[in-house]
Image 1 (cartoon, one colour):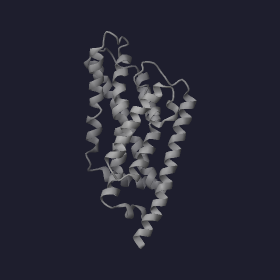
Image 2: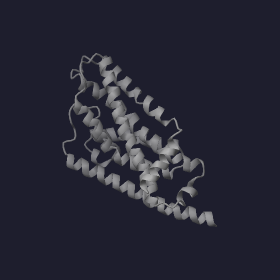
Image 3: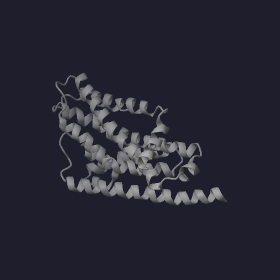
Length: 248
């Protein structure tokens, strides 16, 4: 049943132009990071790692979280704008599968974003004059950032489900990402979901900052399970509320 729900969500997105935003918008932090690198080559001596500090600073702080939020807001947009909530909630499928199907697609989106950023980072490096290929360690940081972003995905799905506005959840993701960078730099990253994404990507750092992988994994798991459970619980209660209104 979950797979059928995933297919249904994919059908909703088939004719959207959302993919264009995910291809074009990450070019901006790559371009900004490359520009910063060229302007500060006197201080940035670690080549690919130095370039990563510049690209990841912009990407993690202003783009990755909001792009996740954009996707989550869009996949709830049909239910909010086309008054599709009653039909969605009365379909003969478990409520858990409705939420989890959207969650699975959003998680896949985060991985795509990270892989695309790897491609853009590689291109940027060649444009600014770096030789060879980026260290595979940076690719692992990007993928670890996807793991760190799992809690953000679940949280943004809950926010987009509860808030009818398309822009508000995206703005909250931007604020959360900026605060996340500040908290991770202050040693409090394990206690804020947006910081886990930043820490996972090793944003603005040239050396690995996640020394405690066990703590990182536990924090990611707790936030992910907490927000997923909250989303399913809210959807179950909202189902009852909508059903009563419909039969009144």
